[in-house]
Length: 447
Image (cartoon, rainbow, N blue to C red):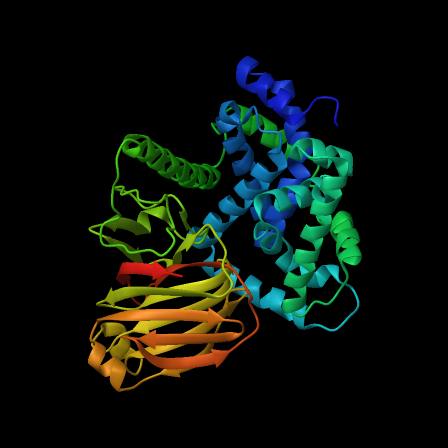
């Protein structure tokens, strides 16, 4: 372990306002934060701004994190959240260009593995379960030995070694599905060598000064990034607290879920709450304010791109069903979602909407997204859609590599695709400058 652990430094800063302690934290982790931000954005200047914003957030939340042994995991997630917020709100055009560039790298022939996995790495790591992700970050991003990894995770050295090995195998499978064949050992060596690079020399000093001042000297854009990320963090924490309170209040009695009939609850069993259920998570590309829960249904709204409401659990073979409705664009069910840019969607685009009128009529679409690029696997236009109107029961199933969509219990699309074997399930809306999307999802079930 390092001479002074992260928790001790956080406590020194939170309790004594120790600038030296915070400077040590920045020095220890600035390269990790900068490297993750740089891979997300592909722009050194933007990566520096994200790095400043993340450490401003850390300074503001130090008191609540002072007992957190796995600070690297928190910083990794905070960096991705802040970077995704930046991409969504300010750099959509640049993001599309970057995705095209990263795809061109993936398509290039060659033996060097790092240029091929670099664009995929952080999404792959973020898709791991919490302890697997912590193990990878500690072992390869921070360069800890297996004994130290075990101490942080509360496990033996042997258990830590097994967890790291399992996580590497999951990463290997993730990359293989995306055309990058390698071994777990090669991936481990590559990540160890390349995942964290040196941040600009002056960045640590400027980050420390700005963060300790709680952002007082930061640029307007950096403060906007920090405030946006803090808002999302606070909203997520609030959801958990609301449900925890509801559980206590209901401990002496029973309650119903209202009109939602779930085979296995996405949220706390038999709890009816006024907000979005806690086990649903708005994707990094979505704004929590775009979703609400009322009168037994989910309400989604977007005019700024994709917004997805996802389960925290992952499923392989699964069926999700809902009564979906939209008057202006589309309503989608999602399954086997790896992250915001990878997974399957079933799109309901009814006749009689402005969007259908401008795009050749209504349709049911089975789509796959890989690294943000959407590919249509199958499309249905026919009598069952004509009869449905602007509200219908949509059912989306995955069994092995077979995907199926049913409309009002009629099978309308079937397609085999082996790209994704498991992932989250959920709901999706999409709107942009060409048209706002408003959709409702009721009677949501899955099995």
